[in-house]
Each structure stands twice: as C-alpha cells, then as structure tokens.
Image 1 (cartoon, rainbow, N blue to C red):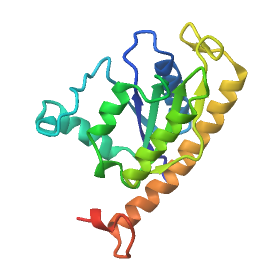
Image 2 (cartoon, one colour):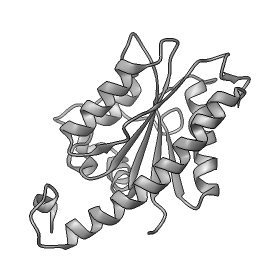
Image 3 (tube, rainbow, N blue to C red):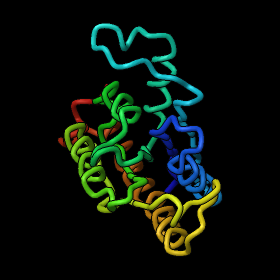
Image 4 (cartoon, rainbow, N blue to C red):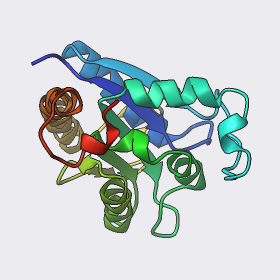
Length: 195
C-alpha cells in the first residue's frame, strides 16, 4: 500500500489561528510517516465566494481543482462558529462535488463545545458527495490544548498521533481501492466516474 497524498485545508483566515497550528502539526506528522501533504491556506491563496455562474472560470480555479483531484484524503480544519463550519471552509466545499467522490474526509475542529455538530456537518457533506469520512474527528480547545502557536496538551498530542495513523492507513487503503474501482469494470458507486 502506498502512502496517501493529503490536501490539508485550513478553514480559518485568522492570523493566529489555532486551526492552522493543529493542521500544520498534523501535516508535519503525516510527512514524517511517509505521506505527502499539500497545505491549502486561504489566507495565502484566497478563493472567491462561490457563484455557480462564474466559479469554474475564475483565475486559479483549474489549479485548485487539480490539487483536490490529486488528493486521496481531505484533511479539513475549521473553527466551530455558532455550531457550524467556518464560511471559509464552506466556500471551499461549495466549489466541488464529484471531485470528492471516493476520497476520505478527516475532520479537525477548534471548539469550546466538542464541535460535534461541525463534525457531523462535514460527514454529511462527505456522504452527499460520495466520499468516505473517518468515524471520528479531532476537537480541541484554544488555550487548553493549543497556546502560543504550539500544541501544549498531552491529551491532544495523543489524539493527533492516533489521527495521523488512521488518516495514513485508511487514506492509503481507500486510495488504493478508489484507483482499482476507477480502472476496473465491476459495478460500484465510482463506476460513473470512469473515463
């Protein structure tokens, strides 16, 4: 099984974002485990608001779509805003549909209330787009788990170690099967995406 290619999507524009801190921590851990990681930070690469009339013709969209299509895993990080995903992450998700099919969603949420509704919303997006989702996500609390740009709690470090392993292992397995399904002839939900 080959190591998966991961697109880490930072769903926060905040300059001192704890979501960014945790996703960069995960990116480093995943690279150390042999995965390749592409970090998508909208603070550096702005994405216009989704408009179905113009989105796919916007400058830079073709490059972004290629980055999504290269990914085996979408590592999605967001703050919990009023029990929901950030507008930054939702805007990214709105730009794609078929491109997510058969890929793994792995979710990370900065929340003072466990972020359960946010994880559930991201699993719903995965299901609607024929993607897979890890059966759990990682939630953490600013100042308790992350402080001054660093992961500080042992409990969060342990969860991130488990998460890194599961993203790498299940991401790799699903990527292998996705490629086989796209190249094969058997029926399955990916058959409609065969070229």
